[in-house]
Amino acid sequence: MDSLRELTAADETLDPADWADAEALSHRILDDAITYLKDVRERPVWREMPAEVRSFFKTPLPRSPAPVAEVYDDVARNVMPYPMGNIHPRFWSWYMGASNFTGALGDFLAAIQGSNLGGGNHAAGLLDSQVVNWMKEMMGFPATSSGTLVSGGSMANIIGLTVARNAKAGVDVRERGVAAMPKPLRYYASDQVHSCHRKAMEALGLGNRALRRIPTDAGLRIDIGALKAAIAEDREAGFKPACVIGTAGSVNTGAVDDLQVLAKVAAEEDLWFHVDGCIGALIAIAPENRPLVAGIQQADSIALDPHKWLHAPFEAGCALVRDAAAHRNTFAVTPEYLESTPRGLASGAWLHDYGLQTSRGFRALKIWMALKEHGVEKFGRLIDQNIAQARYLTGLIETEPALELMAPTTINIVSFRHRLDDGSEERLKAFNTEIMLRLQEEGIAALSDTTVHGRHCLRVAIANHRTRREDLDLLVREMLRLGREIKAAAPSM
Ligand SMILES: *Cc1c(COP(=O)(O)O)cnc(C)c1O
Image (cartoon, rainbow, N blue to C red; front, side, top):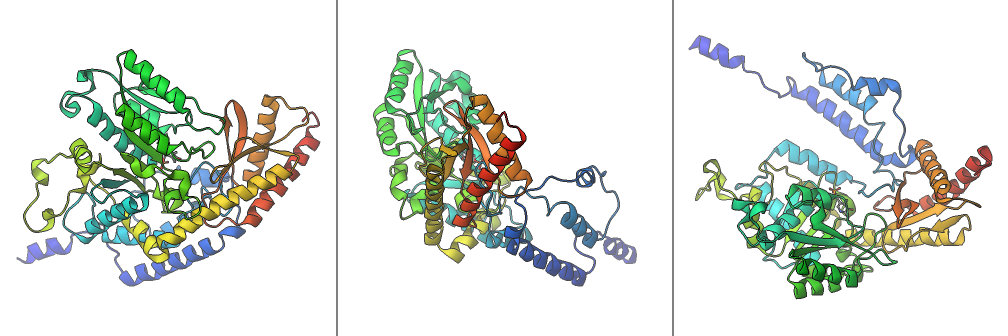
């Protein structure tokens, strides 16, 4: 007996040896975190890492213990000062949200509780389903529809496109695979469609060519006549037109396809109607701009991204599917080790039946807490605010002779460039890229760039609850200064 007790006394654990120490360190981390957020405006948006920071990440696998306070010091020194920068008020690169403090607390509490949202009868499971229900309500989707929280928009799109494939395959594609389909499927989207759809088509076994890119009009919206012609042509050639993907907010310019017309075409042509709303679906909650996404509630499936315009800390995406049975039938599998029981822990819903993951994180909590704290109306107003800021910047560009708007501003993305007196496209690209890089390297603002209808441009995407109009004034001033400096140093510009 005694020797048994000795053996159990020696059991190791990952819990702190001294909870009082853990408490003191946690309070210090929390204080530092609050200062970090409070002072974010005073710091550069981004900075290059010195060589010693880069080499810090080459240290070998730690074999023996270190005090956690030292571990934290390493993080404070080498990680926290060199962020991506998207929590900064002047970060407008690519497209991402700016996170939020309450969401960070939610992530912490989710990790403390440590629940696995694969499913089961526990509070986190109910909360996860509640957040999905709130998303349906925001989109105007019926209560009978279903959905799931995933890592982000790319996964949310894969969910929608997979349900579409299985619904339209004409064969039990889960059992027999795509090779057994009587006709090859065709999907349609505008030439502005996000690159994740290509990956989805490849992963689904349909192949990239099965996604037809339809030309866009001057506003970068899908050309409906060209879409109809492509569908007719494919039917004639023996394909099965299966799905049309509407983009609600394109990543290049923020263009919003005419979702009402797409819904109608999809109904007439018997296509699945999927909306990639990673950027713009949430405009449905914005009081002033909501008409821009009218028709989204008619979709068969929607991908949206709470880590963009709801500013959830990464990661959080959401897929909604109108036909709950079609959704579940695409993914549900019940192995013998995951059977439900009439009572107890295994009597709750199996949330992994709605996607590809088995274990799932408690990502709902960070969304839930921030929505409860602020209310959905405030999130809607913040979306309107970003769109108004993009229009304000558009106005600044239009009145500044040295700058040139490159695409119409529909929502919160502004595509523009600095002019050159006698610039070829190539020189304009080099000049504008240099301005963009100096803005980043001087820590002033983070912009990204793209090419729209063959012309290079800089992009400001304002999905940021910390941006103020004065930040946009500063951007224009600094761009003009850098433009002058670069031209002075290289007079050929
Ligand atoms: C961001 C984005 C995606 C991909 O979403 P992730 O959350 O980055 O995976 C897909 N489509 C559009 C239009 C996007 O803007």
